[in-house]
View 1 (cartoon, one colour):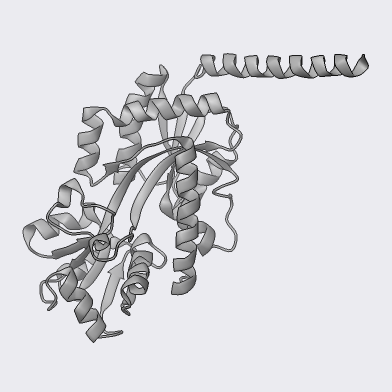
View 2 (cartoon, one colour):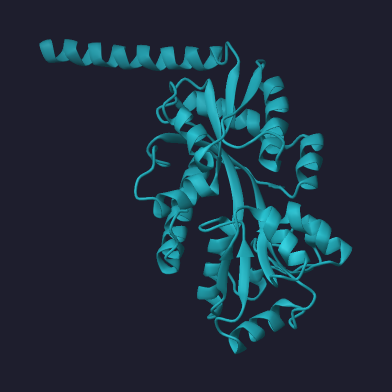
Length: 324
């Protein structure tokens, strides 16, 4: 008799908990949502966040306030959200460097990219591009690989810094193509691009937004991009995957909430973000700064994060890359 009563009480408690969760989800959001961006205002990442926030606010019926929290290569903003209440009122725009690469690069991080966050959805990706100075003898990717193989350790590539996406992309190509390019790290892409245009360095792996204008003007050659498929902005430029199947190195972004955020709230945010990314104005605005829109379920994003951590762990170990 006592066991029966206990079972009934447990079932009643579970039912009440489920009902409370449903009611809370239906009421959500009842106040503005804070959208943390771990990078400075005005850049392409900020443009991505604000483009989503504007339409998402209409979907949720509440303000979505973009909060730029810069510093420590994005870790300050990520940490703020990792420690925030798991109520759906604080989310973050995560980046490959903080989520996919960081766990292998740093011995200790102020947050755990997997345990401390609940993935909502991936939102966008941006292929990188190999650009060369016109004085380099190789004029296309096939010629470049042949040239690099014939000149081991004599071909150098510039990037925005040690352990940047560009750096690890070059190391991944070294491994897959059997070449031995040497890395030249800069403190940011600005000076690297200036030196490349001036002919002081011959090769660079960089984001498209900063280099495509120079390719269009003929000052640089765009020989290959790093995504799985050609981008709308660079249909004439082949991908590395066309030569080395499976090669992919894209700078991706996704939205995450603190771990423990309820599934109904995650679903509500996922749906709202997806609708935001289907807005024609958002699609055009993001294409103009080199983004390709990508979205899916929270489960798909969680699986993608795990696969990226695994992939980049091998690259970081093989390259010997250490944080600056």
